[in-house]
Image (cartoon, rainbow, N blue to C red):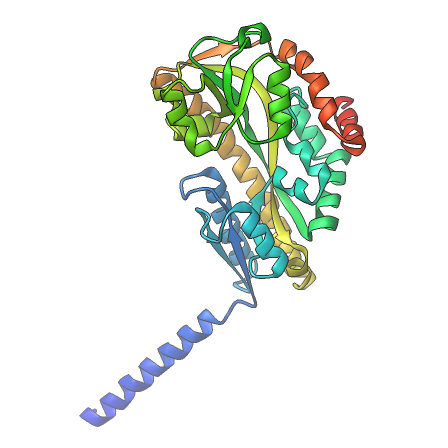
Length: 327
């Protein structure tokens, strides 16, 4: 029969053993990847990041822990890039912002560069994509390990826009990107650079008459409340990279580097499926909220925009542009 003292000793020993086991579980990971990005928890990018986390942790037998920080918890896109370069973060999702270091990354958001999604995929996964990724790695210390297609940018307005002539004098908000300003000016509109946070109120007050963004932002910003039409201009098709710090990746043994790269490849395929479904959902959701979708003469838009686009590119970017157009 156990005495009270003996029972206490046994319980204390069991508690100590559980504590030690718990400590070992916490300390089990040899490497930690801090993965910060700007999307919210419901966004398909965050769902893809969580898929990556699950794959890496399972396939590394717990030797790698992935910590996902959505909603700019580690700072803005540029903040996280800087943190990766300093070694205080490890991964993020980023796009044409990389042109601040690598000019080739500007090709990720050039108006009417791509004919369609298949044309873009051919560029991203071919020699052109290799050149862009190589320059990004050489000049930023970030290694692209996956890419996601972004929804095309579309025009919204309160009158249907089918040809460039319909734009005549239209006051349209654009991001503060010189190439975007020049392009819309060449198309006949009156572009106004403005912070995204000011767009809804400016449309409501008729300070501007139109804006352009992917369907996901048109929905999340509730532009259906102040705009009647989605004009399917598809004027910018772009992609975004999932990147990891080169030093962090190469600090791991080869087998774990392979785990990370394999998981990134699976994450990319997973996100692609989510993206296709989400684009269908977005269009139907906006139609259900009363927005009318307008077919646009995209060829006429592309032809009229081309001179302004080419004028904005330097010699190296023009070479990439020509290579992509020839695919």
